[in-house]
Image 1 (cartoon, helix red, strand yellow):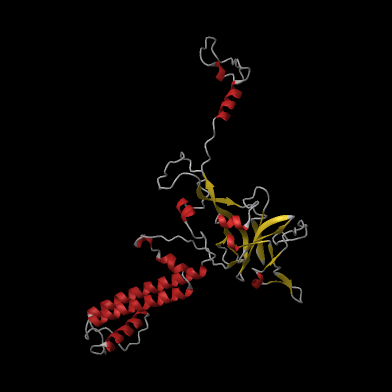
Image 2 (spheres, rainbow, N blue to C red; image 1 turned 180 degrees about the vertical axis):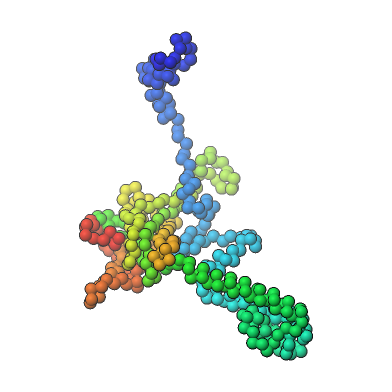
Length: 384
């Protein structure tokens, strides 16, 4: 008994003596352990952080793929209102063709607005202007273009205070417009961009006496990418118990019983990070016992609506800015018992070449054919 206990202590001494023997001949701790084992454990709750931010409604209810091949998501937001429009972000991410079209429309629209104001001031506002009609509007429009760009040919000039006031406002708007357009152009040019190419298909290929899931990526720009890392998540529908008594109607109106929910599993990779990326990288997930793909077939993956979600992060060596690339592979885009064709060759001078056209090249292999273990002198980033 601990010396700190008083002699006349009337409390439960057993909590201070964890190994006090009971009349049944076993310690109370062992008895408590047995009682705990007899109580059925509750079903483990789903990992709320395992849905990658897609949410249960998207994960369980979407009939489309989560990620398109170009990395965009198949989610449409509605009723955002005017506050949901991010003009700066849109102008940074639209294609160059649309960007110049939008800039041209904004330029012509502003000049048309000021041409309308000049036209409304009457013939006394500007010198040497036609009296009325389309010719007058066009003259006002081209005067606005000269004022907006501070060209100043001198043929037409304002003659009234109202005309000078409109010219002042337009000169200020033109100054802001040129600054904004210049800033947008600089931001678009300075923003790190990438052209990471993913193979059209993933393959289940022989690998070290077994099989492995593989897909290939390549840098589509001449600038270099360094410090690459990738994450691959396997997603599929699974049948889980509803947790309600038999015969109970769920709030959604469906009957009880197993329901299909989507689960997400991170895939362990042969290597998830490379320092240099001069040619190509074959991402490999060995299919060993414990892998979510263990003993799966193409039919079972299709039945479970399986999808591979791929996220690649890197640093652009030219701008030193981070880049992100995303893609996905559905079950129908996974080729079984195949492997990638060699992508490297040497020219007569001995220089190493990587053929981008062969990025997605694959060939079928015999089902019974097994890959030999990887030798130490082989490059682990390429399939055996």
